Length: 87
Picture 1: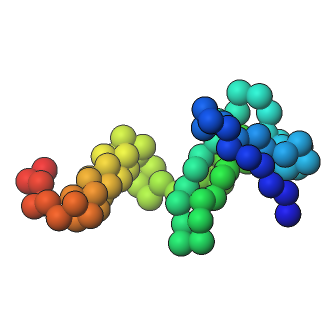
Picture 2: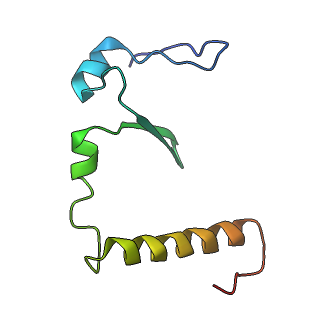
């Protein structure tokens, strides 16, 4: 297990061995995903995007994105105990 210290500016150094192993290079965006066990840190590299292959149900990106946004809004409203939107 490797550790790092968060700076006063909120920056975190990812250890070199881990950066090399997962292909995290300068300029690569990182996804921070909250889980039940903590925070999952995933680089948005080629492997990350390939992991989405085949997830679209209809093959229509615009329609699938619209449905995903509606579901996201519904879940967020439920978290905030808001009434469901009419859309």
